Each structure stands twice: as C-alpha cells, then as structure tokens.
Image 1: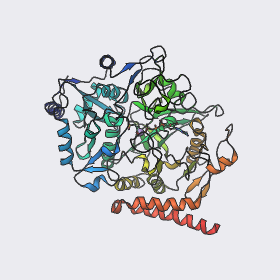
Image 2: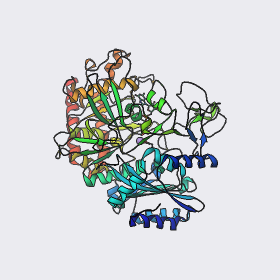
Image 3: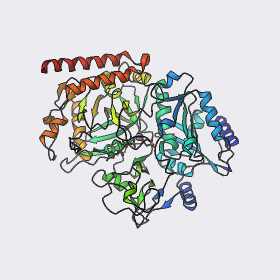
Image 4: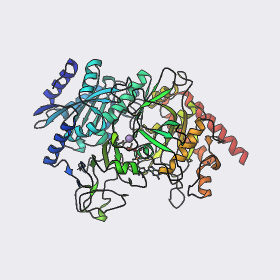
Length: 587
Ligand code: GTP
Ligand code: SPV
Ligand code: MN
C-alpha cells in the first residue's frame, strides 16, 4: 500500500531514506494484521502468551527496566520563541531539536521493518476528530496503536481528503537513556521520539499528539485538549449527565470513568466515554461538548481488583496486552492488589523475591480496546460527542484539599485548575509522593506556555453563556495514622451525585472563602460506612492553611511573568480577601 497524498508519500520516502529500514509496511489496522504482529512478536520474544484458559488472547511484554514510564526531563517543546513553550516545558529551538533528533534517527532502522500507521483520534466521522501518521520500527507500538486509536484505511482516506495530518516519527533506537528524547514541533504539527518503547513516549497518538500538539491546535482553533476522563452518570430516573475530570497520572481517572455504584445506590449507572483524554468544543448553541480521541485504554494495573474496579478487572481478562506485570506459576498475570494467586516471576521475568521490590512494576499497564469495557457508553463514538455538565479538577493531597468544592464562577474555576497540586506517582520517572503544582493535570502535557493556556481557558465565557460549573475533588485525604479518610472508588459516585445536583440547583452547600462545599447533610450518605468526624473533616477547610496555600499558588503563578492573565491575580486576591476576613473574625 502507498498513498495518493504526495505530502505523505514524500515524508515516508524521506524517512526511509534517512533511517534505512529493511522493509516498509503500511498498516491496515485489521485483526489479521494484529494477529500476524502478535505471532511475530511471540517468535522474537517481545511478547509471551499468558494463560490461555484464564486470559484468552492476552500477552505479556516486559520492557527494558530503564524504560518503564514517561520521561518529563527528556520531553521538549520546540518553538522559535522560548516563551511560547513557557516555564512549564523544556524547550529547544526547532533547528536544534531537528538536528539532534535527525542525528539519532540516521540509519537507525537498518535491519528493521518501518511501519507506517495512519490513525484517527476520535470518531472517524466527527468534525472534532484529528488524524495523524506514526512511523515506527516497533511492532509493539503498532499493536498498541491498533487497540488505542482508529488505525487503517478510513483514517488514511480522511488524511488524503484533508491533506493535513500530524507527523509522528518514532524509533526504539537502542533503548539507551542517554540517547532518548521526545520532541514536539507544534508549529509543524510534528513529533520525533527516539530511544523509548514505553507508553506515552512511544504511542505517539496519545500524549504527544492528543495532548501536546492538540492543545496547541486547540488554542489556535478555539477548543481544548485536556487530560480528562469523560463519564456519564445515570440516576435512577434514567437522566444522564456527562462529567469531565482532570486528575494527574495515576490519580484515579480510569477508576472513576468505570465506576460501579455501591449496593446502597440502587438504580444508578455509570457509562464510560473515556479514561484519559478529552477534546472539548463549544457547539453552535454554546454547549461544551466532549469527545474522547482514544479508542482504548492504557491503564495502571496495580490496585485493580473486583472491589476497586470490577469493570476493569473483568475487561482485562481477555484480548489485552500487559506491560511489566508479574506472572503466577500457571502464567496468569499478577500485580500488587490482585486478590488471588501469588507471583512466581516478577516484572523483569526473574524468580519473584519479596526483598527485591514489588512483583509488578508500580506503573505496569494494560492496553485494551475500549469496546471491551462492560460500561462502554453507546455515545462514545458519537460524532458530536456529549454535552458536559461539570468539569472537575483533582489531585492527590494527604492534607488541605477537601473532598469536594465548587468554584464560584468559571474564572474562579480556572484559578482552581491552575492552582491544583498533587503528590507525584510512578507514572513518570523521578521521586514519588512529592507535592507539585500540576495545573489542570496538564503539567507534563500542555504543548505551550501555561500563561497562554489559562488565557485561552479564560476566553470561553465571552463565547458562551452555558459553560459547565467547575469543581475540585480529593479522594486522597489522610488522617494522622496515614489512613484514607474517604473510602473512594465506587463511593465516589456520592460526590458526583452532589456535583450533578448542584448543576441542577437541587443540592445545598456552605459558602466558604474557597468556594461552595457540601454540608455533611448535603451528601448522600445512605449506606455509607464512615464516621461523622471523618465526614466533617472532609467537608471543612482550615482557613490558615488555605491562606498559606493561596500565597504559594500566587508565587507559582507569578513564575509565568507577563504571560500570566491578570484575571488569575484578581481571582487569587478575592480568595485571599475572603480568607483574611474569616481569619480576622475568628481571632
Ligand atoms: P493515567 O492513566 O496515568 O493518566 O492515570 P489515571 O488517573 O487513569 O489513574 P488510575 O485510575 O489508573 O489510578 C490508579 C491509582 O489511583 C491506583 O493506585 C488506585 O488505587 C488509585 N485510586 C483510584 N481511585 C481511588 C480512590 O477513589 N481512592 C483512593 N484512595 N485511591 C484511588
Ligand atoms: C499518564 O502517565 O498520564 C498516562 C500513561 O496516561 S502514558 O500514556 O504513558 O503517558
Ligand atoms: Mn494519563
């Protein structure tokens, strides 16, 4: 196969000329092609077959031990003006970025097959969808892209019709951390990634295209590309509200997107639209609508069990690629938090030794088609997406952040998003458990200066009078014994219920300096096992701590200098004033 589109054909020719592959394979995205790739990877040892009885069509890939997560320090935005990338990104000039990457790619595919993957992000007929082509020398990437995106002829036809596409060039190279970079050239809609075969570093449709490049496109074209799950919440009357939530990596998006209501919440149902990325557009009536650009899930495995996420647990019993989990004696996948079985081999294929760390890597992942999900929404493939009733920001905070609060306005909500902080997780290399600012959960993913990004968010009220309300949640508050105060998982539906009821003006709240919090009585606690003191702590704020937090938020925001919208300074000052007068009254 080749293409009618000269720009695509000549790019493929140039890349082949430069990287010198043994052969070129244009991907069709068919099941037969997937099976062929699997067979080939089984033959070369890239994959092994898992227990066919318990886990039909499931395979295990063990990555290089130095290549197990995103690498933010090796990820760059290349723009002519450094300020366009902003303090939130590592920067290089496009000339320097290309020169460095081109040197790495020279001859790197010798003896390898070069795969050309035309893909579409989003429903193929959707005006909101966008296409790309990834060139890679990794069959593992091709197989994952087949599960995660819409690969094949329909995408190619759309690309040929539109004439534009995002160009992603990837090679696993030598998997040498010293020769590993992920570079983005937003003005050229192109990506070059070398030296990693893992997740968002290598599946270029995901974070590189659908977040970093798309966020840049979204700003130019008036829409938003966000690190958000999209979930439909159906109440016992059958009314469905759609909610988009931005939580940082490994902070509960997949869990919330696939939530199973507890026994005591009869009649409630949850439908998954997406678990990681949302593209948000205003429609002609001014309603914010969301599509999920992805067609599958690349989810965190550890902690998944029948209690925490039964939908995910069932979904990954078949037709799944596991990366970096452990295995049992009878070759079933195993991970920390799986209730049954025990590990025989760890994520590096070694005989399991308790003293050598966890059996499954903390950032081990499953890749699975979204259609495997028992809670998959019938609207997940709707070309116009779903209307969003509420936007929710969140993070992992042992302290400070209450269970839930509602912003006073869209502009205040933008400050809430911009000020969000979270404890770091194993999803990226580096220290775990360190609190850092992660605005809108986009710190690793925004393809341009955050100052401009907040300005873009703040431009929406002038374009619509029907914007969703904005909230903030925290499932991760702990008591002084280090125990979670909130049971989380399925019980989070109670917080979603309050959010929807606020949107529908039928739930109470207490006004506080930081926004509207539920009184304990405003939450549906029927059948919830939790003591009153914990609920009270979860639904109150410490004004003094928040006063300190607001100071730190302003310090952080000021690092964006003249790109920081004045509106955020104004919003911060209003919260400070409210906190100060509350503190003065109390003293
Ligand atoms: P990425 O795919 O990395 O973007 O992350 P994600 O936000 O989809 O992460 P995921 O849902 O897979 O988060 C997994 C981690 O969050 C596991 O450690 C879970 O145990 C934990 N988690 C999810 N929901 C809850 C909750 O309600 N309460 C608590 N305490 N932990 C939760
Ligand atoms: C994340 O880290 O937020 C992920 C996994 O969703 S990856 O695609 O590897 O970025
Ligand atoms: Mn993510």
